[in-house]
Image 1: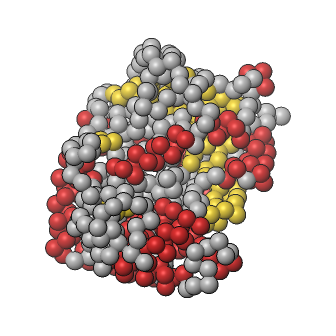
Image 2 (image 1 turned 90 degrees about the vertical axis):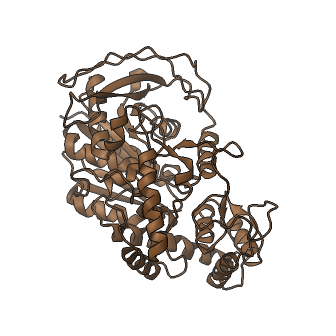
Image 3 (image 1 turned 30 degrees about the horizontal axis):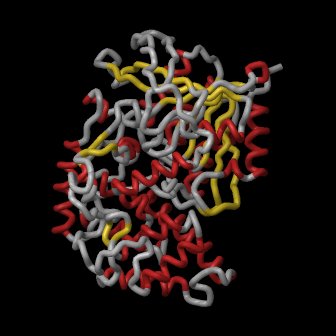
Length: 508
């Protein structure tokens, strides 16, 4: 579950747009490819052990594919348990090693998100782990693999934290039932088969289509979930497997939100320590927690003008602001909290205080106005296919909130995780076996990378997966605040490279 921009996964259309822009600007090596359509791939039949792919150019004008990346189409069953019931076309990517004579192997990439395309990590992997062919798919419901889209007005009404009183909770339930009905994929039946195990089976179809006997895995954030399922199903074909920002599938809704809240509070603790040490902090010499709470009270009183990317200011929005900003810059975060405590909007904007009147979690403009589309790509419900997160009732929402506030005394909760308990009231339902522990059929241990203070995938999740794998896990902790970026650390990168070299060494 990624937080690049998503810092943390955005919940409004404007934030989603900004996250996509951030991803694009983070890849300076991306160049425009020939945007003519790729030749259609040969379609493997469901019973065929190997399919074939025809590689061509890449037709993605919204965010051009990196120069040198080839694109193709792989057709697989919509429902792997009923392979003759229909198929879906998935976008495939391949980026060959710069020197084929020195190629070390192939890395199958599982992208972050849900919502990121399969090739997005290619630039980073090529930079940090040169010498490997890179392959990937756009996951189901993402990019050019039957993209999931939903009604904008329903998305904008999903709160970051579910309401705890009966009236507002019933309104949320009504919205979520209507919300999921507006969500569409191509083909239509795909929306009910978006889970990680289905994506793992798709990845195995790609391996067979490429006639690769042995591959390596790299999964980041939400992509680690698909990598985990692949290891359990097809790990006998895996050499090295590197999971960064690890998801733990074997946890309850309550565990999911409380561990995430505790992880976010750890980021706040780092921020508070930094402010105590650095005069560059606008809150230096002050009680940082008290300033944060004052900012929340000021926002709840309607004294902060404007909004956070269309979401009116409230105590919840102040927490959201911290989650988005702190991994990016402690200094900017301190400046912003100081402004909020004074009733100023750190995001700018000329609206008067209290303008808008929407409840927390709602956007500030109606769909169809100002260029906002009636429907928008929205991959977040994919999480509901893999985790049983629906909060179910106002009573459960109250108990969840009490638990997260105990875990995070200052922040109160992680909006990034609690938001899913609202989203999943509508659907889809968790796939069968989605909560089972992680296992591996690989002969090699799995390397689990985590940061000491991660706002999206707390290190506790990696610890849980390490326990599930037992002796088949190698845990690596990078001293870092933020989500991902472990390979930027020279020591972590060196350990990963050496591990992959060992895992791909020919057996004697």
